Length: 318
Length: 187
Ligand SMILES: Nc1ncnc2c1ncn2[C@@H]1O[C@H](COP(=O)(O)OP(=O)(O)O)[C@@H](O)[C@H]1O
Ligand SMILES: [Mg+2]
Image (cartoon, rainbow over all chains, first blue to last red; front, side, top):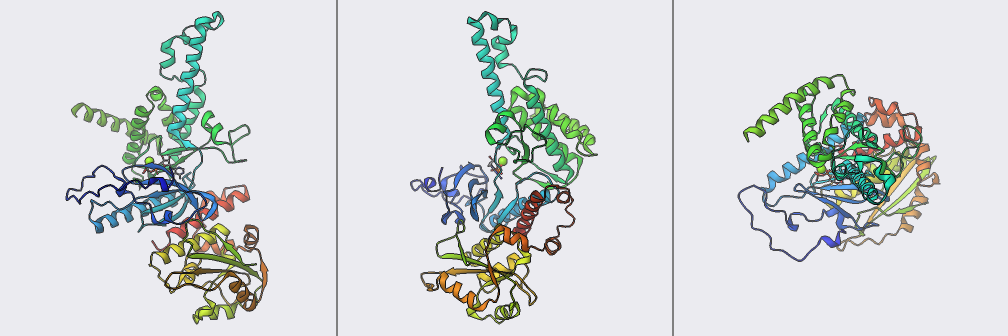
């Protein structure tokens, strides 16, 4: 969507409500940030619109440099002074944590610009796709492959000899560690765990780990660990090859408490299970990757068992 | 050698012009014009040793323009804003050898500017005693004083950068760290 396309027919502006619970977002809650009203070589693209704000893909400073522009606009239902203070606080917190991560060598987007008054954060654009998209793509291709095999088997004697894998249940079955082709998926899961481990090691807790907040960036030319690695977006997405880059530090905080780290992993575990139910059984591979990244990791994993237990009790009561 | 640079997301009322001079012999004079606020010398004169790349310098220019547009400048004009964004408050020293000059021409309805980039080029040619050089990443990289920058941006404790083998990757990492640090400074 282009910037021009976001302006729709005028809608009635809702009257201010004393209750601070968020109403349904309307276009009026999301005016274009002033920076995007000025000319650029290409029109900005709207990437996502969440409850907290929008992300645009646009250029930064020079026409050849892409950025992700996060905009947290003022919330009309909140008191303006309080709102300005909250927005400022959140933008600054996200910016400072990103800079801390980069100084520690954790793979996160670089910070290009901060305009805390306007609620803007300009970040290095990470090429590639969210891990969510990559994992779902892998599962969809697996299903397609199995379906083709199953269909082929009906009219083809030789294919039928491949046996029970061609049956319909195999097409929809959960992914297992020992099935053919699962190695690349497990490798990706391991790298996810390692990335989270490096983040925790640097003294940052993410607060909202999901497979949407992890990007898979194709290796830069010449930077792949060894030869034969994918260096294009398409190839990376299909082979699940590339570097994990952590994004979205809107809820992150600095800290090293085992409990907070364990909750981070628990949030990821739950999010993974509900986003990728077919691959849920492979999640322990993420934890395996995490285990080796820093000295305190095993303690965090022990703590994770307590956190899980509490989560289970709560859901039984709830 | 004055280059007119088009910045993304900047209104057409603002145009940006940049020149580089090497082996400058009258830096003291240029600095004194800045200090005495001579209106004919409303430029951002910056010591080239503190500039990493086009992106680094233009990030400072972009930030200064957004601050000027929002009416929240902490210094007298957009040029002094650029200087304070880029490197401390004083852009050049009497001892400065290589200079990057930025001029932002602003034309508003209530204050139309009649100056052109040709006027700026001619004025600089007359008053800066030095050799014109291209405003290119290669040229800027040659002039960068990394020890100064590392100290100023507190980059010496950043161990992982020191571990990067590839020199080009290392410089790019440092550039991004400096731009990030710049965007957070004063906040
Ligand atoms: N630096 C970036 N590079 C590329 N895409 C990004 C970047 N930051 C965000 N995105 C895209 O925008 C989406 C939302 O960004 P995110 O930071 O997670 O904001 P939110 O708080 O709205 O979830 C991400 O899932 C990703 O697709
Ligand atoms: Mg997100």
